Image (cartoon, rainbow, N blue to C red; front, side, top):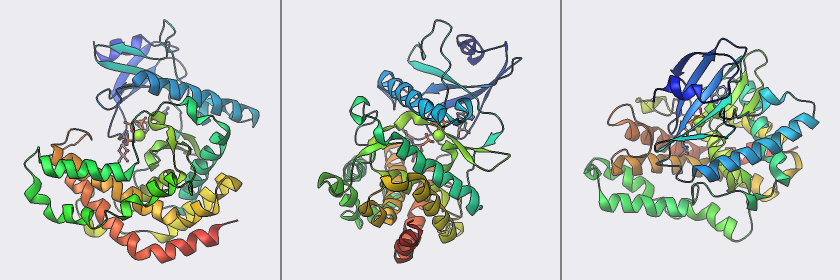
Length: 360
Ligand code: ADP
Ligand code: GN1
Ligand code: MG
């Protein structure tokens, strides 16, 4: 079936005029559907190789979106712009399965943009506030009703073991190219246990978290610069706030793109870090604990190290997880992440001070 035919299966208003590839996600295939009606729509093919339990995933999204929509409604907000709105199929199902693929659709939130790179502290502060608020709003949501879409997603102890397995198996035959990178991770083996251990000891709480808080997963209103809608809810599950905070910092405080080939362009922007901390702490309000504030810099380094290690693992496995545009793409991504880890390690005393001073 063509994407045009698949689009016809959903209860869109108006006739479908065009279906074109859209966005920069690494996992799903996203299309923009234009119609002769008032709205445009997002059509997505979920990556079922990664999201085996797409039923559980879609249940999570429905529950969380409905919960958030109620809150936004009570606060007098605009639900269609501030929340993801799923469009059912014409036979009223939340998604449709065609062969091995699962397809779903959302209202396209108009007059917004996403950033791959940011240099405006103000917009980044707004983003931090939106993600902080997102966690605060979900504070009362019963985490036990959510399925764990990808088990051990941010369990960095487990990520380290998976990395070792990939090194050992060397499925791609590329191991000898990356001995320096392998050593980089191995030197940080103990560090990778810090958050996992803190959760196990009850020092850091498990919450309902987004788990994929990079900048292109939040829609920014073109007119106001406000971060109005958090998208890509596929990985909503119990997790730590340190993961959500850290992943935004990983992506947003890097002065280079995630796949910049010239690593000398990578640096850690402290002004943007301060902006994100300010916004995030304002958004989350009193829901954050002192221990979490004290560990925000660790979350940032951890998510960057985890992401670089995942890119390296995928490179060793033969590029089977992340979408790649050319053979060394995962290695290029790994290099930007490891360069950023080094910058953050050097800046960590300042990062601690910044978080302390941003506390309200
Ligand atoms: P992936 O999981 O592959 O990253 P996303 O759900 O993040 O997929 O979608 C990819 C891109 O599509 C986003 O970065 C954003 O630019 C755009 N997008 C997704 N949903 C919407 C929406 N409801 N309204 C406007 N743009 C959207
Ligand atoms: C993937 O789907 P997308 O592009 O928003 C990945 C994240 C990584 C990110 C790196 C389900 O996010 O975990 O941090 O790429 N999502 C999944 O850019 O693995
Ligand atoms: Mg995304």
